[in-house]
Image (cartoon, rainbow, N blue to C red; front, top):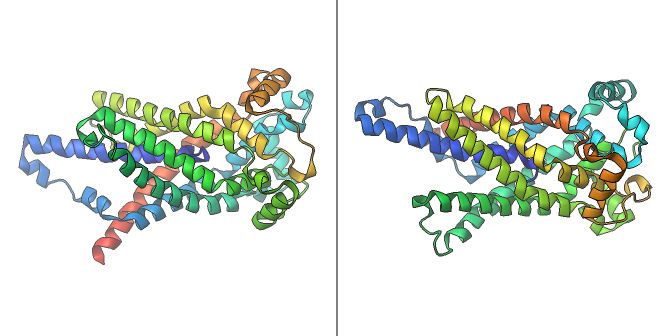
Length: 350
């Protein structure tokens, strides 16, 4: 899933871990006595009763709300990431989060922090739909492979199915909805001059000026980042959660999941951020009628950035990204869980 899909990846992996943690707890109680088992509220069965449409709705709404709440930090991240394309080194050295935030408020107004957020919300619903649908079918395909049919009895095979299925579904969703992601970057990167007036105008303008392939600039870097991002998020989350619960089994599962999910998001952001930065810059190549800055491929762009801006240039904007990941994961996770319980109650009453 895509880093925008970072939050989505952590939550999806976290939800699987949360379900397995609940199941493990119930088994332990069952082994110690039936009386304790009967005292557990029937919350988990309710959560498992909701169907695909309800899960899709919960995931889409939670992702949209999370992105809306963290939109100011998201826009700051994008503005920092693309600064090196058309800004001299002297200005870059003076850049800071507070200075850029103050500039946005004074020159563009407070509402400008949410510029491009509408297309982000528009992007989340089809992205979640394709992601959910593809993940389900990729898992079914992987289960048909000899040796993975009985994956539930093999933790290694189970991890492989989730890992590969999640990676493939994320790549599929990112490819299908990519034009909306590109438009979001271009709208968010606009400052005082409004070259693109909205989602539809941006799509039409890009197609007319840059061709249909212009809507897919930066897709290669996006797909390269999806796999590692998922791998790191899922692996770090599972390791931290297992370590935490083995030492403090009495702690709330929700708190553990939120903390471990935030840390896994920070870890995946740190490792895959250079790819995300290159993706953003590729998305802005030729935007607003400007001349192309990078004449080479993906690796040539990496060399150009390190040569002109240094290694630190590959992590330009990492601080607002860190500040965005932690509340983003928390908001998304809590909203997702709350909506699932609400939808489960509504389903039970029907």
